Amino acid sequence: MKQLTVSRKDQDTIISLTGRLDAKRAARLLQETSQIIAKTHTPNLILDLEAVDYMDTAGAAFLCFIEGESRKKGRQNFSIVHLKPGYSTLLNMAKEIRQADFSAQKPKALSFIENQGKKLLDTLSEAKEFITYAGEITFALFQSLLHPGKIRWADTFLVAERAGVDALPIVALVSFIVGLVMAFQAAIPMRMFGAELYVANLIGISMVRELGPLMTAIILAGRSASAFAAEIGTMRINEEIDALTVMGLDPVKFLIVPRVIAATFITPLLTIFSNLVGMLGGALVITSMGYPFISYYDQIASFVSWGDFTGGIVKCFVFGILIAAAGCIRGYQTESGPSAVGVSTTRAVVTGIILIAVFDGIFSIVYYSLGI
Amino acid sequence: METVIRIENLFAGYGRTPIIENISFDVFKGEIFIIIGGSGCGKSTLLKHMIGLLPPISGNVLIQGENLSLAEGNDRNRILQKIGVAFQSGALFGSMTVLENVMLPLREFTELPDAMMEDIAWLKLKLVGLEKSGFLMPAELSGGMKKRAALARAMALDPSIIFLDEPSAGLDPVTSAALDNLVKDLASSLGITFVIVTHELASIDAIADRIIMLEKSVKGIIATGTPEQLKNNTDNPFVYNFFNRKIDKGGK
Image (cartoon, rainbow over all chains, first blue to last red; front, top):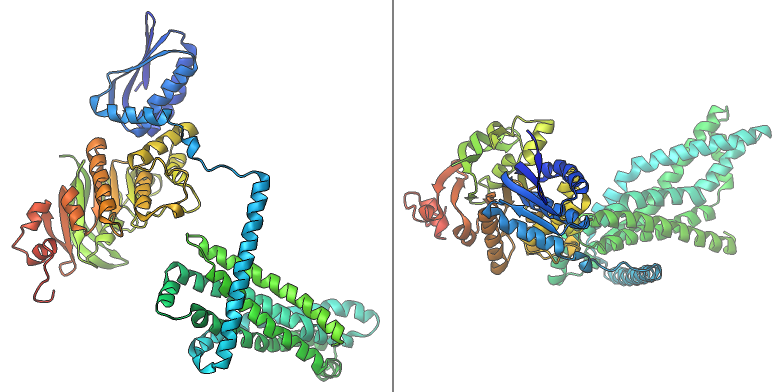
């Protein structure tokens, strides 16, 4: 079926449309109609809608669009004839929309300087909020330590189980592989000097002082800080935190303190486990090179001191607090919207890892100064 | 009267467990058709089957003569483009402005130029009274505005049938009444058929042409008619109590 017919009469070009005038039809007609408008030079353009039996808002928008195209070509006289009475309101509304200037409503785009200023203000305000929450958590922790009976121990053990016991397989896997790979890499140059056994010293000291605490903390940041942020963020969106507040319960004590206490105690425990499994990974390499396991053990026991071990474990307590605080605070800061929890979770992991890296650096300097 | 939706011997539910058994009814062109019933009677389940979100356990859902239950791929998409759905929460995409939300179906399913799509989207927003809120983000809208924006998006492709899930839920009486008027205006001016799930009696009184009432115990329809007919239905105490806000002394 022909979509449109064109006829000319004296000063008039008449475009007759047929059938339905909806979005799909309008898209098909648009190019053809625009070409006709561009090619014809009669002063009057008439759109005849006698054979149009359906028109919706897309059809009305199409007619207004054609009128606009016609006026752009400098043609003053444009008319629509035989429009069914039921469609006139729709067409008038479409004309109003075409003439309206909605761009004034558009929010003003910020200049580069304004944008940077806004970002700085946002960062500062966020930092202030973070510090405030950190202060609240510290205060609540001290209060809880003064009154240990008021700590929600059942929740604390549940969190400890989820974040600690359930994390054992992943911590074991990563630590074992790291110990194994490190031993292999170190064994290659050591073999040139016939000193493969000294790989044990390297594995022992690096696992106990640095890699064990760091890997465990990073795994916990990825696994538990994100879980804390998602849980607390969802509670925020579901107004559960507001419900706690109006019941007179302090959400920090109720939700955050058990998580911080749990994370603080499980991080060192997981680190001890990580150290052992990492050293076992190294043992596998050394024993496969023909050295007895007891030599590997002796080598580590004689080289790694209790000071090294304690230094690593002390770090873990701080890492545990940082991971839990980052997760809980980011969850607490969750705003509304479908992506809000996802954003909080990502920020919890990023904040956790940054804090771990920064504090690990601080510990290194302090230990170096103290000669540990 | 032209039938636009036909439900034939529908067994509806989740998995193989039917919540509604063997129901059949027709919805006619241009009418405001209301689905009501007590909590847990299967209103939302029925709606999900009518819009193709759930496959029927058995039976058919025909939209303008085409079987949505059997259609697949492009055929299914073509049928779905004939309907618009406004969900209870609005379900607006939070990362887009209101205008972009309304333009999304136009961008995906038509080949119109951007300027024309924008005109159509503004026209829809004007129809729902949101022509001053096009550049706002959904998070900046009130509950009533979200529902109106969802209605504008449901109308984007000029569907002949629009489904509304609990449009008045959570709205104040004034906003709710304004939304009722809007639905009535759209039905009369554009000839759109509305299928609405609600249990707001004031809203039903104001806009309903025809009602079906579902009941949990019979897993189906217990009454059909106009609001007046159902309100005066003394044969069925459940229907009478529901419409006259009476508590059943038997504790039901």
